[in-house]
Image (tube, rainbow, N blue to C red):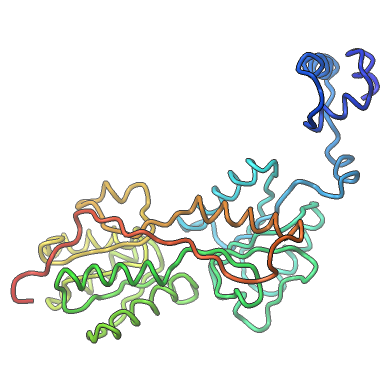
Length: 330
């Protein structure tokens, strides 16, 4: 820093202000300092700045799966939102969601020097009595029913599902079948519970649950079961990939969509509008979920936010061409 100051003809304090992005430096002086930095190959020491400020400007992210659309898009949104706030993101995938793995993940993130942690929780780990997050770490959780213990941000799974079921019932379908996600997924369970509640409140019959694993292949296998059911005229799939497999199975069995069977998905992936037919689905605002996660964790770091509670981002029903009234007489 002293070498840069001598070359630029300024004080070391001015070099510090430029390297840290502080105001109060004229544009001409800033250009001189940056030119001197470039000439000398100077790079600010982030570790030293962290010790001085007491923060590392880094948010850790723990996730248990990078194979699902929701987790990947949420992670992308968190990284983008953190960057806009001047923070970097350190990602730590955890292969096996156990107490020891979670504890080890937090230990590794502390060694990597992060200011706070966002946990993208796709399984019921936080709902198990044996799992506790370290109390001294500022944590925000995505996709968990644990708002009584942690700060949680999630899509409104319940409200979105009810909108999908109501849409199909309003079209005239007697009931709605459900192609559910895996049993260990909080999001899948939330959508299944909301599906049951919506049909029960409407006084409609509850068809047998059909379960997949989020993949298009599992949707296809489940679709082979549903395609032979003449009483199945409407299906709510827990995500768009399974809906894609379902569409294929229905097509192979000569069941037209939406003339014979209506299909609604969940996620509104970019390809949903290119399905055949274009898929009616629930749009999840992953960018907003990521932004709210970053804002929540920054408030907790500054001791400006609540220690617990849940923030829900609405899911919006996007109407396309995969839903219609049921066949006459059904």
